[in-house]
Image (spheres, helix red, strand yellow):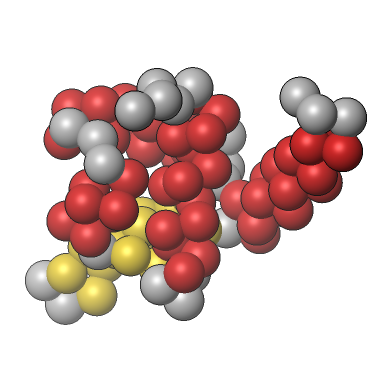
Length: 89
């Protein structure tokens, strides 16, 4: 199995949120991102810091929500991936 780099992991986390309608429960993100809890927390801290994700609370539930910046990141990631793929990278 191929190891994912940091950019791919961040991409996978944001896509998991987007696929769940823009917000996801922590346990669902944990399973979808295929990371340990501690690794997921490290990546989340970075995503919060860069404004790509925010945390919301509803009743007793916690959710991670992709922001407009996060959506923009995914759009740019896809463009770059298409571009590099067209050159066989």
